[in-house]
Amino acid sequence: MKLNLNQLKEGMKAKIISIDTNNRDRERFYALGLKPGKEIELFHVSPFNDPKIFKMGENKILIRNSEASRIMVESKDNLIDLFSAPKGFYQVYRLNGGNFFTRKMSQKDINEGTKIHKETHNSFLLIEKNKTIFLGKGQLNKILVSPIEKEEK
Figure (tube, rainbow, N blue to C red):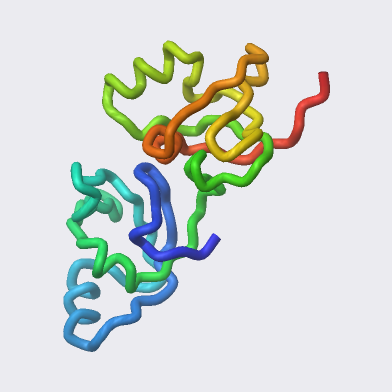
């Protein structure tokens, strides 16, 4: 899946495809190791979503969203946040929140590995518990899921 570097979610990995910027900025990016073909991972998102910390090998670099929006990547992961996901069947891959968010989701039986069926824009069914959950946009944005095949009962 092709997207801008600033569209990655925390924990997602991608390969740099191209850098659309002027020569001066391109040289700076190259000096940081940002080159087409390199692997990159979104390591941490700042509290106000800008800047973001990316990891390349053992190195961590800080990039502003305005810069990251000019870097095209191809995601290695077939992951999407639950808010952006279309209706269908998914498995929770990661909860991108702190301890409080993780505990709150755990109380609602939402953990890594939980299988769900997204039914509407803000609701989904926990397949194993047969329980419908309603969450807001902010919470749905923090849940990374991967698509799975529909399970037969």
